[in-house]
Length: 498
Image (cartoon, rainbow, N blue to C red; front, side):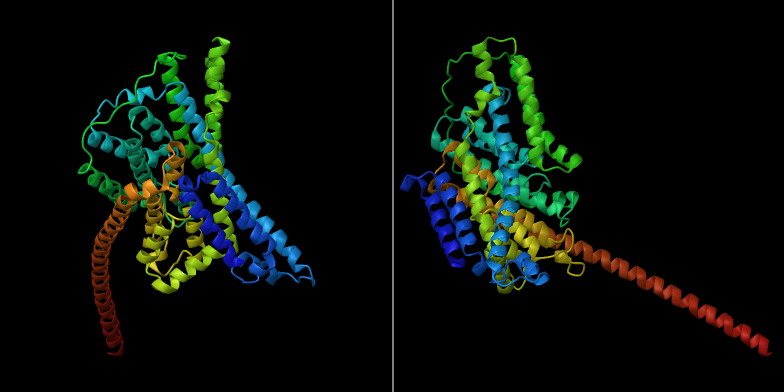
């Protein structure tokens, strides 16, 4: 049954990948594997937990004397508790997603994005590529990769008419959003985990991971620069009724952006989960728009209301998130991810570059959150091994690989899943057009990190030599003082004898 959980997950994963071939929405496949893997786990809890992989279970039965025949009941309660624990973390992501999507839809419904789209006047594909890429890279560091992707995909719909060209730029958004989020302590959920867990510090992760992340974003952009030609076709201007004034559009836009930017500030100040800050922002923009439109006609007020906007939010994408994160949580709880980490440890001999590179590639297949959580559980912060100390090479490189590796496949990151849901991008199309670009950027970033790390180590070695030489000089001077002191004492003793 332990193996059956993996089989169900793989079959479900294939169904998601072949969504357009089998004509079954990916949300349905994700929900099925999410429920089925937990069902298999629950019905065979005693058998699976008796394997001894789940450390929490091992510690539990070690500390208690369990009456005969009560083990299955305790195992079922344990699995239920594990599900509830994971549901809290999953719900935080879902509420964050719902809040971000609703805020973006409210701004869009008020035509607030005109303030940006009107300023992007170029139709040249290459120029637009770099504008979108750089804007996304730095926005995702300030906001986060998921929110930035939602905003940028909404903008692309207003800039590009051709579906396949828009998909290509959406792929670029995924690449640059994940790259931008990796070097910021608030830009990606995995970096946030490492920051809160104490494995990295905020300033150091920015200084050490920014350049590799920038390289991983620039390499795909540079490759596409030589392949893209011509101009984009803008969507035809639709004659629609203006429900808002320019002042109202700009007000809603700035409140929406401020609400998104306020999320990391709220989290830092209150230490509450990010979704609370997002819901606060949604509450503010909801109240402001209600007050703003209270004197309008009933028809206009109903059209602009947040209640009407909620009907446009992509609920199937939320269900997809729920299903896939629930399925991965079952594999984490049963011990599959822990075993994978242990296997990596044995095979690589704890080579941090190999381990983190493999984790990054794996994060394109399964969610990077449980992978990083598993790595944090497998490798403790060391006070002896410099690679595993706070701000050590392993943790910094893990932040980079887990953040950017998800770009290799479209379902490998929250940004990719959001783009897939909003633009209905085919899994196969992404693999054909974007995956190789993502791989090129991914390994180029690792190479940049290695070069940067070697330069830093050379500098540190030079400093250590200088410190050593200085200490040696101090030792020599102290020896001379000690020798003079001894000679002085000897002279005094000689004088007393005389």
